Amino acid sequence: MRVLAMTMIVAFHSIYFYSGMWKVLGGIYVPIWEKTNRFLDSIDLSMFVFISGFLFGYLFIHKKKYRDIKKFILDKIRRLIVPYIVWGVFLIISIPSLFNWRDLMFGICHLWFLLMLFWIFLIAIIISTFWKKPLNNFSILLIIIILYTLWIVFKCYFPYQHFLCIGSSISYTIAFYIGFICAEKEVWKFSSVFVGPCTLSALAALFIHIYFYQPFDSIIIEDLYIRFFSYISIVGLFIILNHVRKTPPVLLRIVDKLDNLCMGIYIFNPIILISILLIPPVNKFFVVNYQIGPLLLFLVSFSIPLLIASLLNNKYLSWLTWS
Image 1 (cartoon, rainbow, N blue to C red):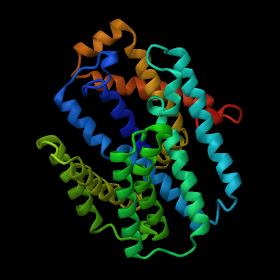
Image 2 (image 1 turned 45 degrees about the vertical axis):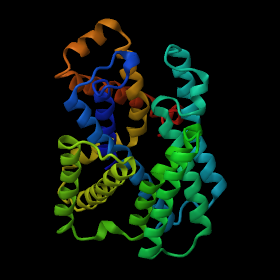
Image 3 (image 1 turned 135 degrees about the vertical axis):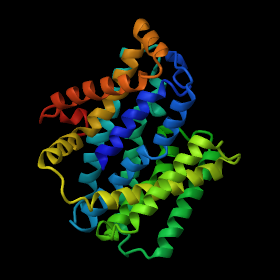
Image 4 (image 1 turned 60 degrees about the vertical axis):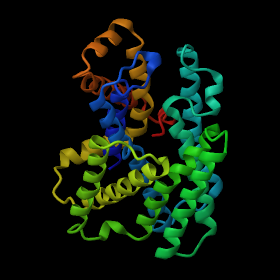
C-alpha cells in the first residue's frame, strides 16, 4: 500500500506544474489537472502517514519492538533528520535562486515531510511507552476530536505554524493515529464484504465533490469533508488489499523492491522535476504540451529517482534515502 501512496505522490508532483502552482518555474493553470491534483492530495500523503502509523503500531503492540526510546529516537534522527539536512543543504547550494538557508527552519521544499514524520514518531513513541491501556471506541473518537481541535487552534492562532513543520505534524498525526488504532484492532482480519462498497462510496464522494462542485465556503467544513471520506477510503483500501490472495510472485518481488525504495523515490522526485523545468526549452515544451505533460513528467520523475535510489541502496549510502 505504501507503493500505491508513493505512486500517487509522484503523480501529484508531476501534475503540480499544471495546477496553477510553481509560478516561479512558469507553472500554468489547467482546470482538469488542478482538480486531479486536489483529488490526489486528499489521499496520497495521508495514506503514507497512515501506513507509517500502522507499521509502528503493529511492531510496537504485536511484535513488542521499539521498547528502547533512546535507540528509537536516534534511529529516526538517522533516517529522517539526517537526510532532511543533507538534501536540504543540497537544494540550497544547487538551486540558490529558489531556496535559502531560512527554508531549512520551515520545511524546505518537499523535504518538510521528513521533518513532519520525525515529530509524529517522537510523540508516538513517548505516548505509546507510557500509555499502557487499550483504547475503547469512545477514547478513540475523543482523541481524534482533540487532535483536530488542536490543529484548528494552531492553524488559526499560532503565527509560526510552519516553523519546523510543527503545524503539519499536528495535522497528519490524525492519520498516523488512525493507522496505529487499525494495528491495535487488527483490522486486516475484518471481512471485506461490506468494506468494498463503503470504500468505493467514499472515493466517489471525494471525486464528485472535487471535480464537479466548488469547495465549501468554510475552510473547516471543507477540510472535515475531505478528511472524513479520505480516511474511510484509506482504511477501506488497506483492508481490501490485505484480502488479495492470488498475487503473482514476480509482482510481489517488484512491489517489495519498490517498497524498500519508496523514500528514496520521494526525495529525488521533486529534485528531478525542478531540475528539468529549470531548463528553458524543456519548460516551454511542457507548457505547450500540457495535455500529455503530466504523463511525461511522471515517467521521467519516477524512473530517474528509482534508478538513483537503487544505486544508493547499499550499506554505505542507504542512510541518505531512509532505506
